[in-house]
Length: 80
Image 1: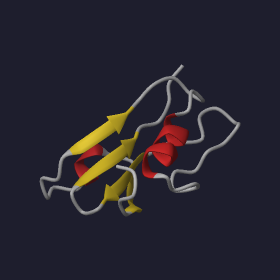
Image 2 (image 1 turned 180 degrees about the horizontal axis):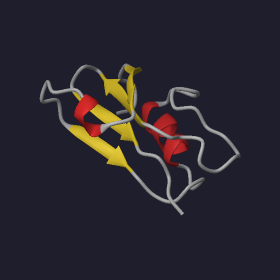
Image 3 (image 1 turned 135 degrees about the vertical axis):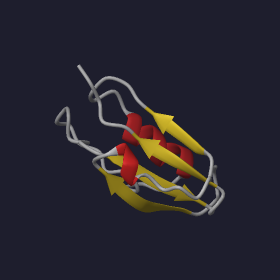
Image 4 (image 1 turned 90 degrees about the horizontal axis):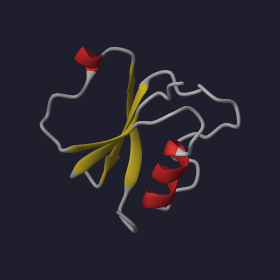
């Protein structure tokens, strides 16, 4: 992933709103405030691509990031 173009693509509240173009997707899920967004930023070497916060539970939608138009990284809301 390093050195490739990554960009915010879409934020959705319902799964049926997800892109349907068949690109592979890699999802990141886990407890609130464990660093899912920070991991996406580190993998893409793009500080601030996925917004981070010290407040747990800030991500409330599925956030899609397109990587070089070849696949997507998906940031899931935290739980717990």
